[in-house]
Image (cartoon, rainbow, N blue to C red; front, side, top):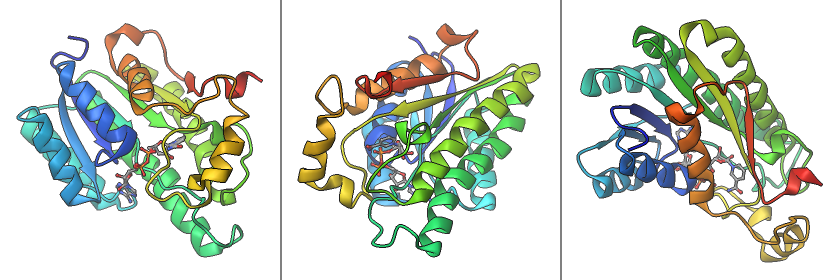
Length: 247
Ligand code: NAD
């Protein structure tokens, strides 16, 4: 199994790509902490996986919440090998793309949440001899987007460079950090305009493969980066986008 004996925290694992990744990690032998603000759905994901999974309530915007989840993970499973910073909110539900309140909310979850995750996971990984961090950015971390608040692009670009910073800064600790950039996927929970069928149909035309991605297609990229198969890959990025960024 590709993740035998590894312990992973996956933020935002109550739905979407986080839940798919949690299930795939467990199938590959990992012990998985399903961490999310959505308690009911998160407990269902963990119960569906069984004894190798555990739900932890996590609000990625709260430093003390991250500290508690990392402590619970190392106390229950003995160590931490993998952190998947997957929790995120879409900027497409905003009415006002210049809303200052939305700017702070989106940056808090998508950018500060990743910073806090790395801040608390890295010491635990270093204490255990190393680890792998996978941060979920987006094609929106590389190119500008229509129909989303500016903070979505800004936060996902921040994730891309925070990842490269961590790779450079913590290579000495045997910690790798890479980003994954999904393209047009199933709509997020917080999607507004980008869930609109007319907008999605228009966006399909921008994808060389002419279809949206599937959650497992992203989870497989995360799995590879979490496993020792990617042992010489750090500071890198994988685009899982049907060719959008190749144009
Ligand atoms: P989703 O909305 O299905 O899942 C996101 C999860 O994050 C939810 O379970 C939610 O409860 C959780 N979350 C939100 N705020 C949180 C907080 N403060 N603390 C803890 N958890 C919180 O979305 P998804 O489509 O699975 O997206 C996963 C990641 O991939 C996100 O970072 C997203 O930005 C990124 N992404 C998504 C798409 C897409 O089109 N779906 C495209 C590119 C990138």
